[in-house]
Amino acid sequence: MDGAARGASAGKFSVTSLPRAQWRLADERCELREEEMEYVRRFHRHEPRSNQCTSFVAKHIRAPLQTVWSVLRRFDQPQLFKPFVKKCVMRGSIEVGSVREVTVQSGLPATRSIERLDLLDDNEHILHVRFIGGDHMLKNYSSILTVHSEVIGGQPGALVIETFVVDIPQGNTKDDICYFIENLLKCNLRTLADVSEECHASR
Image (cartoon, rainbow, N blue to C red):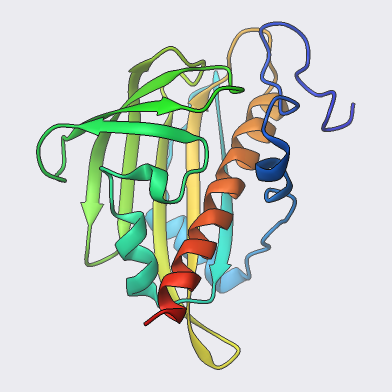
């Protein structure tokens, strides 16, 4: 089954409904070197149960770590780099335990998500978010984002890695859910790269 048809039946995740311009951004893959995989082993410790799946995406960004992190850490404004977020409402400051309600763009199999900030580490550059409610199918979804300094073409750059664990919905396979989420996350990281690189260039 090809990507366009995968998950097309009722009750399954479908990528065909994603806006075409944004879906195009996901058509890329970042292979990690062995030394970069060490970041995954060190900072991305998920323990999936038998009814869950886990995977990761990554993106090299031509902007310094601090520039990328300044965008990524804004738990109160995920729309800065998540093109499918329409609105975010959050009460209080950005701190562990904070909760936000996210309204998503039409065309996705959901309208809102309630999410909690489980970890924000400005020293190690780690963001851990957990979904605790909403009308989506991503039950027990938890993601970890990390940013790592690197050199790209002789200039300061950053490597962003995002891993997730989530329940496999009834009627879907592990491949269905991983395929759907990975492509959403790739769209997010592509936008994060665009925003960060533009911000860096304007300084």
